[in-house]
Image 1: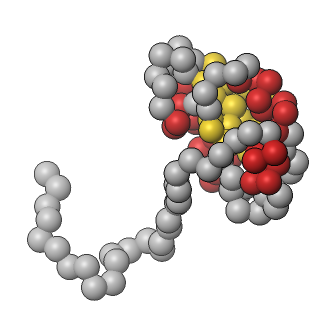
Image 2 (image 1 turned 60 degrees about the vertical axis):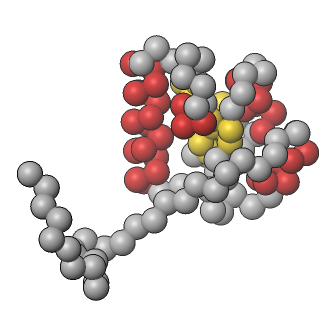
Length: 112
């Protein structure tokens, strides 16, 4: 996980806690849970450590529905999750591009 992803995980932690949920580290992941807002974005584990302990993550959630993100570079994490009864959810990808105008996308859109 890169520095920007770590910052995102910390910001998500703070937002969930301030909004009445709970968050903490478990099994090498930032775990967030908000029982009153049952959406995947607020009920998931985001690996931030070098190693991930899927059992510790499951214990942290205590049977409550949740997802576990599988960032690139966590070799074997998908198999560990499957062995614990997790199944694939939906694809969630991040895209990035350099600063400046995108090539070939001229527009007359104005933001006022």
